[in-house]
Length: 375
Image (cartoon, rainbow, N blue to C red; front, side, top):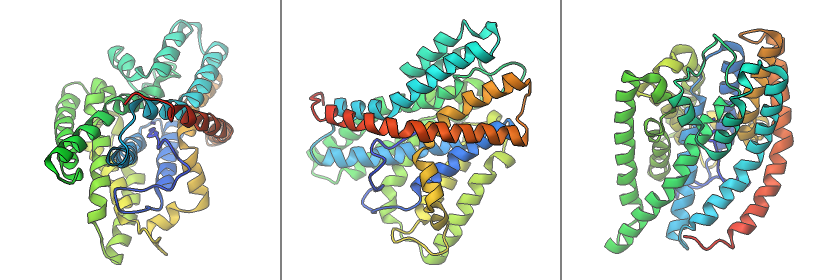
């Protein structure tokens, strides 16, 4: 997820707060780097970059922080939480699905027309990952026309994460209250357990059946769990200036080079997926709440990257079908430099147009969510 990540915080306009560590600059910029890596590697290299893993980690970081604040305040309203997410995520997804259905009938061979409605339904109902796993899909196979809906797998993983995470956070806070303790400690142990068990499962199933593991939620949930751990541990970290500089730039370089140095599409999501997620965690840990003059967070906090980060969810959803239809129309397996630039430009423009619409609908969703009573 593209989480995406979007993959994505339900209230993007608010400053990002992590644990009790205050605002961390560069989160949107990190999203921008992740989505640009995903798009660039798909368009020009035909490879996976590790950017989606960053989205999943950031999703865990932001959602864990948000849910912890809610749980220790007035309580988690499960219905309101899901209503806000649906209002934020579904409008853009629905527009992309409609575009993809139309493009399938216009540009793709008739052999794919019959599969398109099933792909659209799976995309909107949040089970694309299981559909692909059961069909034994090779994510980047180039021996035929790719499924124009298959990138929705990461959004499906995020939806499945959203369904269970409120219960985990609320349970940890409830146990802490009964014991009269700080809720962060039991939550930390719960996240550590999820992280360890999921990563162990991921390593095993990746060795046994890597194509299945790639889409398996159980083999991916350690990534948002890692994000939650980062959220809880950040307030305890206070590296010096030199350490921040080294950690931030090293993390950003490692993230950018991940897809070049690793065979991501055949090695993930086992131990290898620790590379991009820990690289992103290093960048976040290195960011100074006060901002830095020459740190990586300075670059990530620049206006262009912050803007691209703000539309990263939509950009992730748009780039894949635009690319698939371009390849089908030109008969290519990879885009030319000029054609790829056009694909990226069209995707950015579509994301820029649809994100404000999603924001307006999300505002309505927040109003409806405040009236929700399911907890």
